[in-house]
Image 1 (cartoon, rainbow, N blue to C red):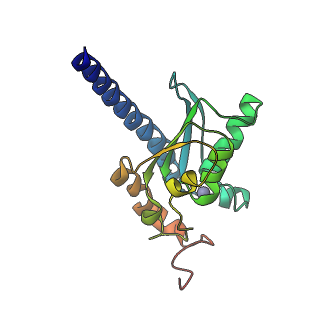
Image 2: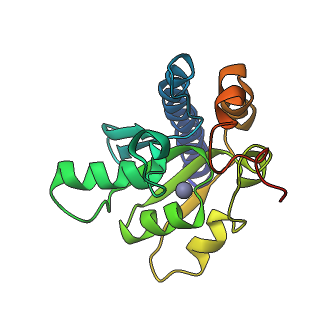
Length: 184
Ligand SMILES: [Zn+2]
């Protein structure tokens, strides 16, 4: 019986890992579409129902498009998802992000009561291209009263190709947070 339970839980864990990869690939592909537009971005986020996996919302970073420094992909997706549900809580939902959420975005995920956050590339990866706030998302979650499981990096190399794409590299030069523009 113990062995059967262990086999079952191993099977479920494998299935969960496969689903995580599938959803990360979805948000990667969605975000990658921006690379062929005039406003490419490497940051995208997807929110799904934790139980059913059904997609609730997905969005990319719109800082440049909306002239809003807080319009990061994760924060935007939380806002849009809550508006869609007409409630301020996303308990029962999971977020996938192409990059580890910054402190602002992780705080937004915590205030939204998300169950889980799964990220692709890390803050360390992103900092090679743009300015970052160097607090790991897991650390922000750990110091919060709200419970949220943070997992990653997942498909890190794939997500990193969003940053290194030639169109993205060209666009970074016009970003106010571009590494090339600052001496930091
Ligand atoms: Zn952010």
